[in-house]
Length: 84
Image (cartoon, rainbow, N blue to C red; front, top):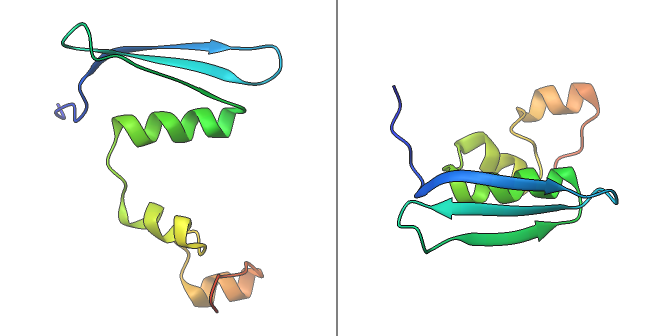
């Protein structure tokens, strides 16, 4: 079993009618909790990933604008790559 790499015991998410989300990460120490809100589902997932996991190499490539796709494959598929 993999070792957990974040200090939280559990997470509570409130899904609001307008599509926004309120997120509460409950810290193992019982007091260093983290609360934040995001305007949409993608933002909620980004916030959770930022706080509970380590980025992988392909994620860094995606953040740079090429989505982790090889340049030749991206060109064939018509996917633009920043800086290319």
